[in-house]
Image (cartoon, rainbow, N blue to C red; front, side):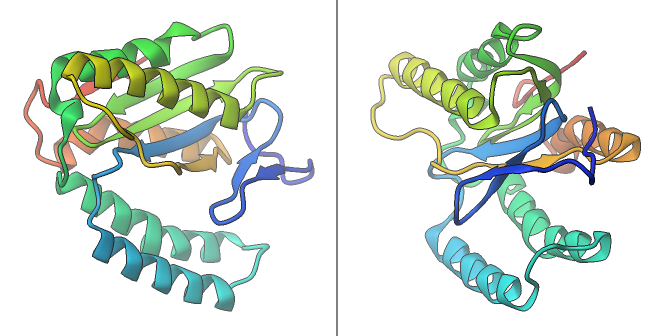
Length: 200
């Protein structure tokens, strides 16, 4: 259920590597394609690449925390500002995402909790062997993009191609992620109906 530092971690992807270790729980975030302005993203990428060049892996806990404070948290602040079309504010669109996330719960993964925000999604789940992170993400994003575009009469990319994920290290990390999901709508000052929250 939690990351074992003595067991190999499988990685895939290159610019933003994704990690999976057996059935370890994962906290994942993905966003709408138009949720962040290009100028902000370009600056973020430049700063991140410079930081990564100065901090090659493996990282200790302090370096890992520094990375997330400087880069992950900044993205979260920008997402919570509610830029872009925010099509997930539409209850029908949010329900399409929520239904997809619950559809294979107990079969391909165990869903702990999730929140569908106006322009992004946070999910805490445990993949079940042999199902892989990249397979699950592809399935969720592909299915929901088709359904939402059809429901809204739109076409073209709905989701940003990449996603962000993190393996759950221990019980306290799990509790922090659960709390983050619950508190994200409050932090973003959303009204009931602007988001969809679910937990086991």
